[in-house]
Image 1 (cartoon, helix red, strand yellow):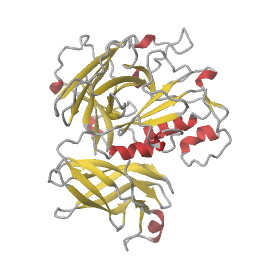
Image 2 (cartoon, one colour):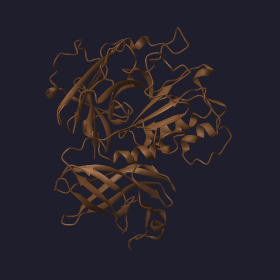
Image 3 (cartoon, helix red, strand yellow):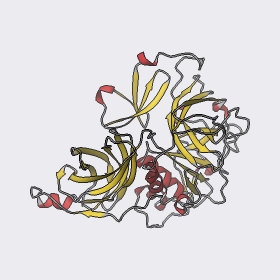
Image 4 (cartoon, helix red, strand yellow):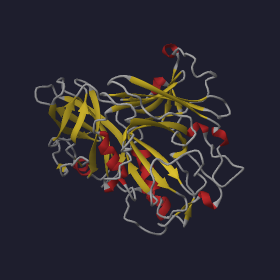
Length: 445
């Protein structure tokens, strides 16, 4: 894991700012270590920003400074960072033109919430190379509603959904409760609940246990270089009854990979699960405590009762690790920069029964289901990269092998929450794009 330099408080303020503006906006930003980019291309990376002002922090304007290049200015907007709060935020820059080079890049903040400031630059290194896949990180929560400590995992996963929805992919595996259905197998065995693992690593203590640092551990990993690209090309219900969910994923490696060295897994995930019985409520060991947690997500538990009714998200309801799934996970021998396609149809999804209930089904929200593609090393099990896409409603095409004229299909835009929006009124943010049978994500800047 990267080591970061101590945070630097950025104090300079423009003489034009009023005394009240001086008091209301203040922040610090860390040096951002190493990140990777293709030569001459815009790239994204994450860096820690701390709000030291007296109002929520929602935007930064900064200048990228690279010796020998013209300075570039960027403005980023993000969900509010509350007073005294800190969070990794997505930033962007443009890489130098030289390939296979390591270049020092400085960032100088020039405005905070639109108020002009003059800050001491912080720096990091950009390493340029010809193949820089979009890197997403997998966080997995092993949990159960019977577990009084599992609100820790719940809050960690909800915080990741809120703050890092496009960079970190979450999956929750339930055991011993109604969501512990028979159509999935856990990728790793665990002895305790909750157990949070980042990219299935067990070597870093930040990756296991309560999950208090899971988001930070995961988002730091996004800045590192992934050795392969993973793209969830298509995810679609094949019928109106939601009995079949079809998925197609592609992988592309930077270099030669031997036969069976890597494997891919497809996971069917559902959000918004609820129930009325006690077994659906989260047993809560934190009722009436302060816990020392500043995140407002904790309030549902610290101010709640011994059993708390919540919506459960990121719930695995089926995966191709399950014996008899009919899916060959092994990646065949391949040269670098060759795309390999994997396809799978999840069957009888609408007939998956709640654990312990012969009359109720786990599929409550077909419109809140998605498929996750996870590429991992076959021996170490460490995750190399992953991607996800929401499952689109049936297009009326019954044969998955039939061609679709994607080039002429109309693009439809949806928010991350699934609300359809007009392409003429898109504000900066992350959107789901459906074009024919292809579903993908895009970032509007």
